[in-house]
Amino acid sequence: MNYQKIAQQLLDKLGGKENIAAAAHCATRLRLALHDDNLADLSAIESIEGVKGQFQVSGQLQIIFGSGIVNNVYAEFSKLTGQSDMSSKDVAAAGAEKQNWLQRAVKGLSDIFVPIIPAIVAGGLLMGIFNILTAPGLIIDGKSLIEAYPQMGDLANMINTFANAPFVFLPVLLAFSASKKFGANPFLGAALGMLMVHPDLLNGWGFGGAAVSGDIPVWEIFGFEIEKVGYQGSVLPVLVATYILAQVEQGLRRIIPSVLDNLLTPLLAIFITGLITFTLVGPFTRDLGFLLGDGLNWVYESAGMIGGALFGFVYAPFVITGMHHSFIAIETQLLAEIAVTGGTFIFPIAAMSNVAQGAACLAFGLKTADVKAKGIAMPAGITALLGITEPAMFGINLKYRYPFIGALVGAACAGAFITFFKVKAQALGAAGLPGVISIRPDGVVPYIIGMAIAFVVAFAVTYVLGTRKKYAQTAAA
Image (tube, rainbow, N blue to C red):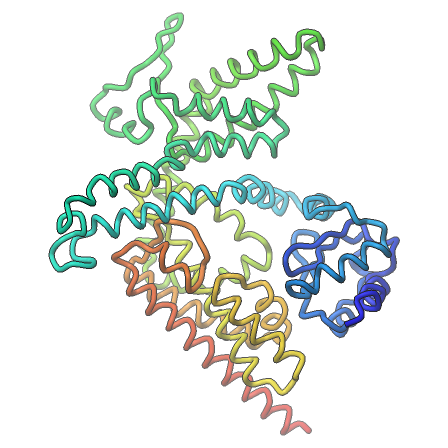
């Protein structure tokens, strides 16, 4: 494979060196921000050797080459453009300039939550292990593992402590990540997060019971009472408080003399933001967060199979627009309040959609006579089953349309099924076949059946639609 030739052809089809605003690559894709998207010949790009598909999202053009190949193509491409030191963040920043306010808001949420996902995944999966050890009848009839083997009791307690830690101290993780996004000192952000979960405060999860009994502790300052309540597991209060911290800090740095900046700015920023948080922002956004979580669960519980089918049907279109990144914030809140919510219903439906995309891609691969398309479809379909859908969705399903329709139908049927059985996840992870380890023990069997439904229906519908299209083309000829 002549990577220099591929890079030159690619540059020509993109409108030349002058049209490249930024260029970088990830594990499988060349990520580009163009000055003028209209100058790119997308159909011609797909005919270049090695290209497995392309799609546009978040103001970026992403060209799929596959692992290993993309590194070599980028090396030659960067020589032609002179943009060898750029990262994916540079491309994202350049692409964001072409986005509307809603797209920028979704990207902002993604930038905040994606870095902390490993901690949430680790905590959730440890919680799953704890449930396996303590769930009666899951492995041993009528007994849990710790009841059958009492010596495992302390191990289960230790695992439970490890599992809860990321959610108890979620405000610290969120504030650190959000402060970097908003332009505040991330360590001041972390300090703000620590302030919100300080052990001297009433535990945030005990707030509801204390409110009913009237036992909420308060600070009495100059005749005003301020509730001493923590924000363990909170999302919205932390995001708003961190944004305020960034604005306060930046404002103080503009007016405080540089000789006093390192002394007064951190002091005043934390004090002012903390005061605003506990008097105004915290109580309001905490209640708003409760309403959001309760509202989502009410919709999930009351809409039933119809709601599950609708969500399954529209999830893939959300992925196309990038809106699915906003779900991370919602899922984090649902998982943080797992004692009330029971977990997140979004993850299982996302998994059904991903499996359906993979099945449709595989069905296309078996049906098509196009050797290049078959070579893309088969590995992309398998990858989608494991939770990574971009190669399948953008490289095959959307390009040929009818596989995408088959995938939507499969996702809708599976979404309806798992919603009927109230399947929820207790952790985030790979939304596909491996996602079974993230599911609550009582939902594992329906989850597996749901994946089978998603696969069979998407595969069958795609195969039938492909047969009809081939028949129609033969008849027209």
